[in-house]
Image 1 (cartoon, rainbow, N blue to C red):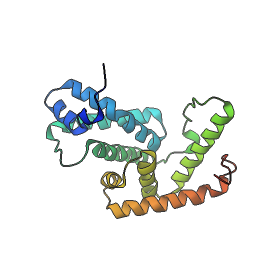
Image 2: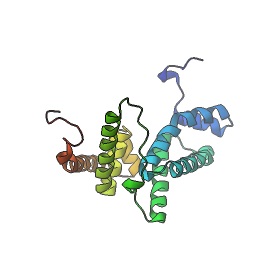
Image 3: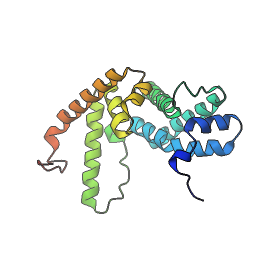
Image 4: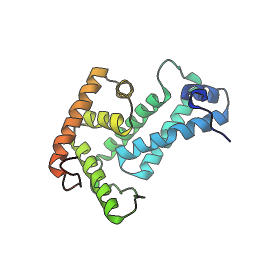
Length: 195
């Protein structure tokens, strides 16, 4: 089975509309397209794979429930999903009265050959998580969506419910804060001074 060219593939919104009309194949295609990103966002926010799966499942169920009433011009499906996931994660973190404790976050398995390279990469990820957790919540969220999820600023603004200029400022201040927090750890994290 060949994959159609990107420009010939239906949009997320078109797939959701098709599902609302009873097309189960459209639901499957949309799930395969968006679920990995939804799950990744939840895992980054919660630091727990099982909880992240619960949140991702709840977010997808909410998407299927609103499908018949979806207004395509209202928002992009991914924007709506990112906001729902962020809200579900925030609610879970508030209910449990915890943030993501670094000691409790299991390190993802690293497929990179060599134990030293794996340890170095794990140290870098842990340092980034710690630095992100040390930022104000809105800055950390903006930086994560912009640079870890690789979303453009206008979409980050829609997800966060902020003005574009506010998001640009949050991202800039967040990056500056990350640099300041990580500057003294360059050698420890294996970055050459010239890099």
